[in-house]
Length: 403
Image (cartoon, rainbow, N blue to C red; front, side):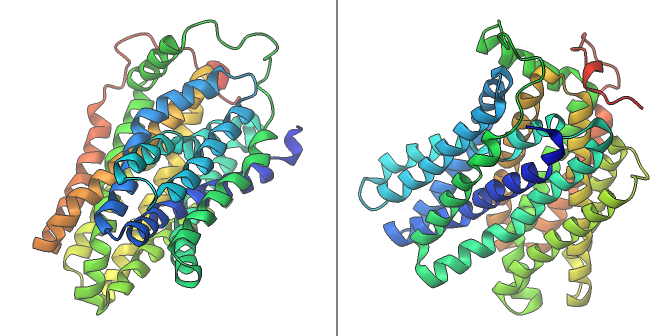
């Protein structure tokens, strides 16, 4: 397929798939509670899907990298994820929960493909001079999906019931199959793409992330930032109750943060970046730290400003991380780099939520300050990674656009 038809089709497919993923999280919570009668089991389903992303990210990325037609491999991953969500729905209430949880875990293994798997294919759909702008738009689809997914799940559950929300999530993921299948073949992929073993490819992907300073810095800083974002999400409901006068208004705070992230990336997409992506990564972590500190003590009038500031830091950081990965990733390992990063960030976010939930019930300001500390540590960790690789790294010159 010619690049002139992309990245529009690519971005639509990525947005639909990611909206399905963002819908599936709250849908699993709602359906699990409705069909089993236990909120704990619904939470366990979501935890199983999320934690599995750590293991699934590198493997999914390696399979994408080894394929001559990575778009078709991505389509297979989408199909597996959609079918897995459907299988969880069919099994809930019919099978013992101990049999349902492994289905959820297996479904979560393909989760990183819905985020990192798409982004890894972006350079094959657009010209090098348009890659930075397309990458920012790609990051915007994640923010828009994060805004639309929970609202869609809640609205569907309210009108048609919790199981219908999970059906919608699976349908959205499945509807992105045509866009993934149509992604262009790998350039020069006439012969076998890989002669090494899958284990060797996994090791090479891990080395590329750990031994390439820019990739290691971006991955470590953004992963810790995601943990802080998860802590803010866990504090949203109690913030709504104690500061704004209603738990439902806490969800509005997260929506405002997502809108601010989208707006910030929209500005970056239309105007050249005043700072290098590497600088944006650590500076955005400090912006989020300032926002979380302000949220810990802010009166209602300033709380909204603090949450908006958090979004202003979150959106550009994600776009900058994408730009660094496109710039530094060896083409033959790009899928692994993106899906490994996606899996790590998903898990860090879940851990942030898990830690902050109980902590917020004891001290809400203390939990927000702890989240701010995590963001500060994220920025500091950027500078803790040596600027020169201690070992030889794979050649990346073929992946860098010419000036």
